[in-house]
Each structure stands twice: as structure tokens, then as C-alpha cells.
Image (tube, rainbow, N blue to C red):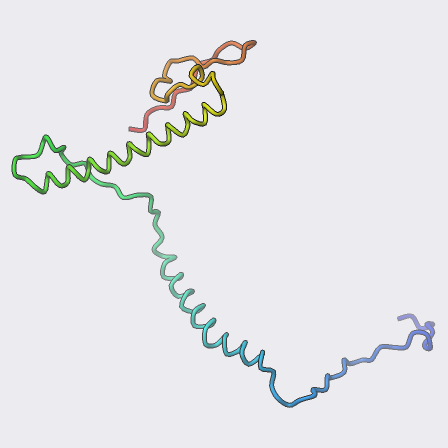
Length: 154
């Protein structure tokens, strides 16, 4: 503060904050409940979680899906080999589920094309398996271009 200020207009603030005088000597129940909850629930749970996360952080692995080895088809099983029959049946069911999901995706794409293109969807809809070597219709003032073909991932 400058030395030439008006002490009557601007008195100096007190040097220390005054201590609040409590009206009662009883402890605050909210503070007691907060500490009780912290030490009885929050601290043990947090400690346990940090312990488990520390153990799991060393065992990280990526899980994509279960890979099954291919088994002989039902027609290739020997007569009376019930284990082979069962494995072939389970493989067929898994393959069938995968095929159903692929069909659902293609049907959704067809419906999206129908919605987007309207009545001319059959001109623009080309199934993925027949795109190789076909030309895609472009705008009227541009030449048509080749549809890029991605290599099969088999």
C-alpha cells in the first residue's frame, strides 16, 4: 500500500482471520457420517479395486472371438463315430449362424440403397460378389470409372 493513503476512508484490514465461535460443543453429525462411510465403505472398496486392477494390468490380452478348428463334414465322418457327427453338426450350426448374419448385413445394405435411390435402386445396386470388373454408373457429364476391388481375405 502506498504511504499517502487516507486511513480514515480505507482502514487496514485485520491481520488474522477471526476464529468462528461455535454455538455448541456437539460434533457435526454430517462429518461423522462422512468419515464413517469413507473408512467403512469407500476405502476398502477402492483399495480392493486398485489391487485387482494392478493384477489385471499385467495380464492384458485382446479377445476377439473364439476360433474353432475345422472338422470333417458330416458326409466325411465314419459310420458310428458319434463324436464326429456332433462336431460336424456344431460346425454346421456355427457356419449357418455366420451366413445368416452376412445375409442380414447384405439385406440392410439393400434396404438402405432402396431408401436412398428410390425406384432406380436396381440400376445402382450391385452385390459385392459381382463387383469385380463391373463399371459403376457415374454422373452424366463424367466418364464411368472402374469399381475398386478389394482382395479376398481368405
